Length: 303
Image 1 (spheres, rainbow, N blue to C red):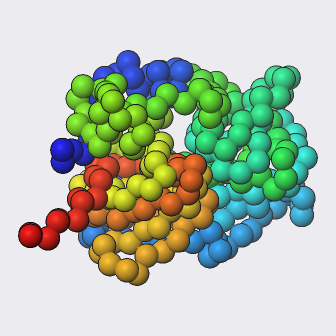
Image 2: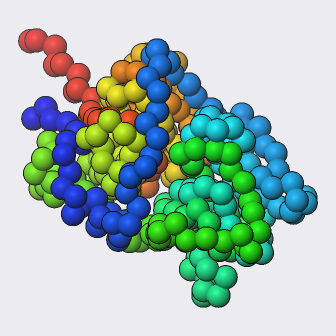
Image 3: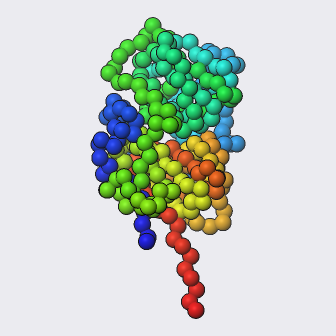
């Protein structure tokens, strides 16, 4: 049967369940401008690294932009590297940010909180103005960080304030994965008796709206298909596994390791395959709906 997974009107209750809290939804998120159709890719090896906060010195975290400019006024997404054993002093930020763990283990919480070491595939948010600490272990840790408006600044804890937002920490083991058998508004490449197809976890926002939203997308080992986006923009970061991607469906595929990024503005189709034996996970920030479409099987020659 020829079916596909489309993000169509997910129930609000499922949006809340995917993060264990309804406190961080897309209220107040700036709408991204409409632009002529474009496509871009940043390989992990192409990221240009610099100090996230120069005041922390050479042992401080390093950052590399994937899209946008974290020092400018607009939205942006960037990678952050943390040395093994890194622990920040208590501090605040001038903006709210979201984070996804890609490698190693990260702890982000109140200064007095017991460490909660989040592994790859975990998601968290840090509200503007709230005092917190960030720590890392397990080797050179890597995270993807995203802001809706910049610049991204680190400020002293004595400037703390409460604007009403509350943090979210979702360990990878607590992510709620949904397939076609779980959401009646979705027609997907999986059925109730075929649980190994593509899955989605709603993290924030509402994918059916014309405002930004964020989701995890899990592609099973051996997946062949595409992500189609009809909205103003679609941005994806590889979190786990190795993905091959092209935009034309030809043989000029690019191999994307964890930390790599691809994105588009305007209507676009990203042809993807996942040959990693454990499957592939993407973090997807989209404006408007997107679809996960399995490849059509090759036609059998007549006779």
